[in-house]
Length: 346
Image 1 (cartoon, rainbow, N blue to C red):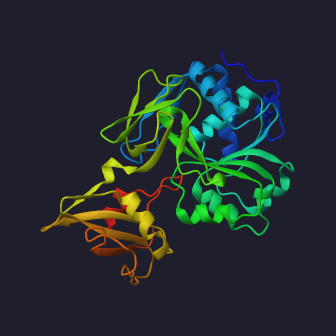
Image 2 (tube, one colour; image 1 turned 90 degrees about the vertical axis):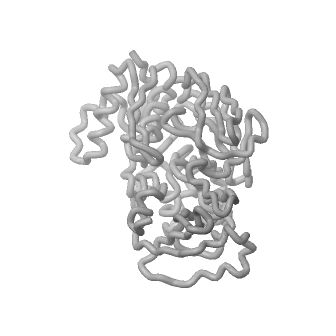
Image 3 (cartoon, rainbow, N blue to C red; image 1 turned 135 degrees about the vertical axis):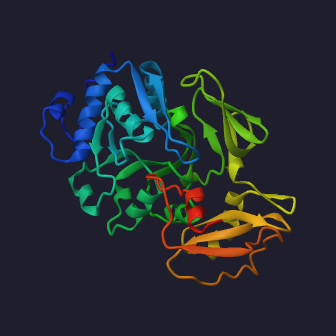
């Protein structure tokens, strides 16, 4: 049976006190159920996001959950009594693991609504030691008149890639907050590599006990503390060493146009300064090229894009531009590319 750290608190309550509260808020009721589940479960079940395929349920033993929790505890220099926040949907691994880390390592956890407002920070302690967020939540915090980042020591961003615009906005902040981008999945019990945005790190670095190899230019993750076998991913990388890599994109997104292989995520970086709206690169069938590059922009109005000064190659320049009023996204903010393409009937 899992042990609950004596210093654990949630919204200022002890474990027993929180369970005895009568909440009307559905999110807090969910956390009550998960607290009960933690104390009695032998296996812990997690739902994958379904971004690249059908969502599925996988499970881990309490021993692997503990090792993962303590790994995060060590890499971010956390401590007993650390004040941490959870503003993530509880059905996903990042939120559950934040709760489990708090229970195992003795943090003082505060549960926020996923769509929090500026006023919520008025009721929190004066210092927050650690908070995991998705990019859209970081963007929301950046829009607040009084920056909450002045109160937060460390922010871990995951669930979707950090865009060049968001990275620039973070670096422009006049705060001491350390920002990290994470790499991981449900199958690895959240992050197995991080890079510090605040230090302009460009490479992901493995956490303790993890190393990497490569298979057909795709990352292979060796994380024996949580997985009994290596995980072969669809993530295209430049493997710098067994401990570091540079992420390039997804192999299942690669476009073959006129015999030239184009990685959409890399092309998106090249044109990111030309477009203010959210966008992504994809392809459609072409009689002459096999596949041709297209640009899909989230906008309710159409407008022209000037690629003349963008130094794009012949096959990289989008042959068509499509506009959609609203993109489909996961709850973490990741664009569901294939679902969006259905709306433009490719």
